[in-house]
Image 1 (cartoon, rainbow, N blue to C red):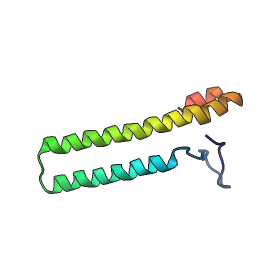
Image 2: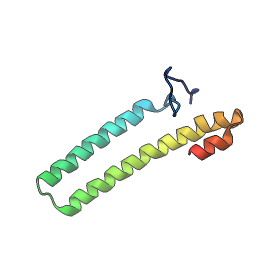
Image 3: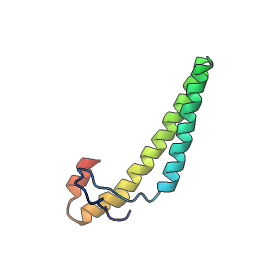
Image 4: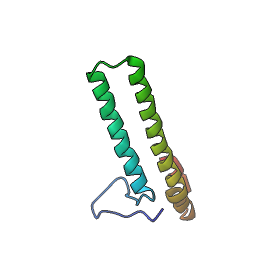
Length: 94
């Protein structure tokens, strides 16, 4: 993961370049479609178990996004912080 970059304004949280940005955005777009689908299912009085199954699939997809972000953080931001002597801070942030 490349070094953190600032937007030039005061920020409490640093910005980073996401190495899997395109894939993450694609997954999130797909998840958004699933959420809209669940709303339509509820609107059309679909069977509860079918709705719950779709919600479980959405949760699983969000977990996959979170795991990719965590892996990227550990391999990029975390490793950089450790090399710079700020490992304790990087671990506390996670």
